[in-house]
Image (cartoon, rainbow, N blue to C red; front, side):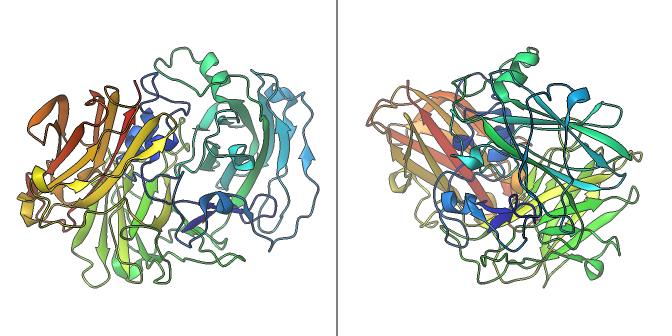
Length: 521
């Protein structure tokens, strides 16, 4: 499926939101690294255990190449104005460049500017009203190449009429590139301010963010960007506002999967608010049966956008979320606790009806009880082919490594059946150039909604007989992340053993999803 960001010419575009693999590899050098190496990032460490999607390879659900999809511009809304060119006098809120707020009723083109020289910051202002649903959207890598280290890795910060920060974004939740975007509800009438800067500039202003790294070089060659501020309403394609008609499946809000003018499905954004401490928001969805997947099995993702002033500005505290089928709405296929989870992402059958239930955590009401879900669907990681035969190291299924500059990566996915008694083994040969380097393993099961409990990953060498030191982990609440594992030498064998202690009695799914990175020494 494609995510169709705003419904406006010059801004409206379809971007690929799914291909096989693992998000971590696409975002290794993004701003926000947790350890200063290229082994992982804090944001992706969480995201990868939830989606494990590689946005740098494969095809999207409509069969379009990801690079082509990122450049696809809809033609069904005619621009009303020329591109706004901002003069470089906008380095403070007081000298901010005023932006026209765009909408379906008021279409137009984005503003265009540069971050040059290194260290430049740009401020914009716009007028908003309390309760407006706003989408602030940057294009930099979308204008050149996704994850290009020589193109701006942007940071967006939103300030309210009182000039206090209310929202922030480094990278989009669906990691097709490092272009920043903010979804939020405006808390008051007045003038709002947006700060645009590069990752290195932001990092220099926040030395307290230890362990954070940005992609070299610091002086970027591609410094152009576009920026738009858009207001959404429920009738806009790809926007689903929960209707608060009731708390059961009978009153569910319908999630529409519409096509744009190029015949590609719009990946919807779910927008909800809680009306009280015991509110339940219910959505009904049916991913169209004619949506094909590029690899593996069909998977549906609901990624929760981060709240708070370092996220979308929400103060809502989500509780549980679960997915049930139309046929058996009281049986949970997948379930998560959004106190720790960031996504629910089970394998589901396209063309069949399902419900998504979302609850509010118990506690006192807050001032901004809203949330956003990025909803999309597509294929899976390479799927186990012989569940009955991969229960031993000698019959382990093969891992397929892919080159990622000097590093290598592999992705895999399957099910552990037999109520916790199943075991899956995977194996691969260490490719040339990465032996005796570092390995990183990311896996998710319960953290993504699976019914597997105490899901465990163990890494071995020597025909699966020698456990690699510090290379095993039982899934914590936010998914498995094993880092800095020393790999065998080039040509050596690597074995991954996956098991679970049990199956939850009230959750039927049995899936797991994994990826790994081999980093050259």
